[in-house]
Structure formats: structure tokens, C-alpha cells
Length: 316
Image 1 (cartoon, rainbow, N blue to C red):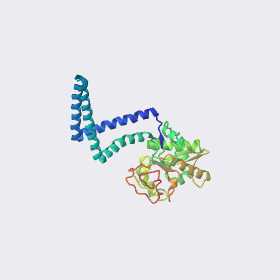
Image 2: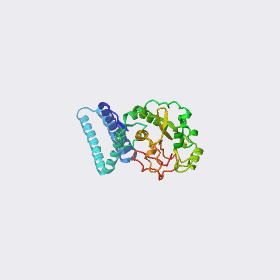
Image 3: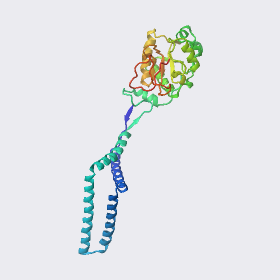
Image 4: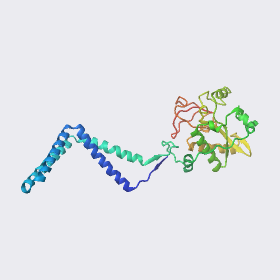
């Protein structure tokens, strides 16, 4: 998101004056360094000025006025020669002026904007001010860990194979991804009334391979082909009446997943519920170019959205 920085008018005028001074100094320096004819004329002007100034100090009456007129004629002659040279080389002079003036003006124009680092400036959608403030504000703290027994119920283990050995350590997640996910949790609670829980965060390559061996209905990503291995993905669910609710067949949970996907996208995360085939409504990930070593999309992926970029994979 880009925001305009206000500027005082007087400061802007001072900057314009400095740009003009800079332009004159640069033009003069370049002309003296690159053009021998200008150096010769500059030496002549300097000699005439020194000679004329000394004569003006000693001369009186008509003699002084003659020298004054002679000096003025000399300056006028060289000024006319410079004007003729400028006219002869007008294309080069124009190009130099455009370059010298364009760079400072471009710098001023760009300096009027600043980027909020938590967002990609290529995004074209309207950014929620609450989300921007949360991402730029103080670091959110992960919620307290839930009792392990809550993750071993029949419903949870049926929908999430091998959930007993899953890692739910927030500290193992990438710092940026962790903060974004905590913002999602906060908005889901404060705005929509959904308490959320982390089912699985970081996943070792060995565990990823074991899950892939269970079949494509569990995951289509092998070892090191998932953002879980890099702490950039998480699987989440909801808490209701002290129980973990995962199934999207529950209308309340499905509504929560839809809101979860909207909020996740608003903070720059990719939501697994938008994938083509093997949808994973509780999954979110923070994609980074080069992490998975490729940029080709898997069949499970939807078309790339205009406000996200980077490497794509079918990650669960």
C-alpha cells in the first residue's frame, strides 16, 4: 500500500532552487571538462575580466568609459558565440538538460511516497486499515497451547492423519509468516467471533514423505516440496465449546473457512481452500520466490492472482 507524504510548500520551493543551482553547477562543470572551446573562452573571459577590473580601478574619465565599453563588447561577443554554439548543438544541449533535470525531479517525485513494508506494492486491491495497523504494530503473542488430548479425538484423527505427532510450535514458524497468521487469528476472533487453533505448523521432510505415502487424498507434495518444511505454512481449525472443529460439512465451520480465506488473503497469504482439486480449507502459506526451487504451478493450483507472485506448489 502506498501513502502520500505531505510536504510544506516553502520547503518545496527551496528544493526547486537547489535543483536549479545543481543544474547550473553540473552544466558548467561538464562544459569545462568536456569542451575545449568552452575552456578557452572561459580563460579569455577571466583574463579580460582581470585586465578590465585593474584598468577600471586606475582609469578616470573618458579612458575609463572606453575600457568599460570594450569589456562589455568582449563579454557580449563571447555571449553571442556561446549562444551560437548552443544553437548549433541544440539536440545535445536539450538531451543534457532533460537528463540533468529529469533525475532530480524523478527523485523528488518518488520521495513523496513511502512503502509499508508488510505489503506488496504491486497489489491493486484496497488494503484494510486495521490489517495494515496490526502488521505494522507490536508483535502479537501466540495463544496458549491446548491440551494434547484435544487433538486425539476420533473426529480430529480421522480428518487429520498422524495429527498426534504434528508440530504445533509457533516458534518454529518463519517470523513474518507467524506474525501474519497471528493477525488472521486476531481478526477472526475480534471481527467474526471464531476462535482458531494451530493444528500443524513446521513439518520435517521425513514426516512430509510419510504423509505423501498415505496417498494423494492426504497430500500431493513430497519431501521438500511443501512450504511446511520451511516454516511458511500452517494448517488451522476452529474451537467451539471446547472442541476442535475441522469438517467443512459443518455449516458453521464452512462459513468460518470462507472468512478465514478472505482474511488470510488480505494479509498476503495463500489459502488452500482456493485450490482446484485437493482443497485444504484450513491451510495457509506465505509464498516466497526461490524457496521451492521452481516457479511452475502444480495441477492443484488455481491461476496466479495478480496481487501475489513467487513460486507455486501444491502444498498441504
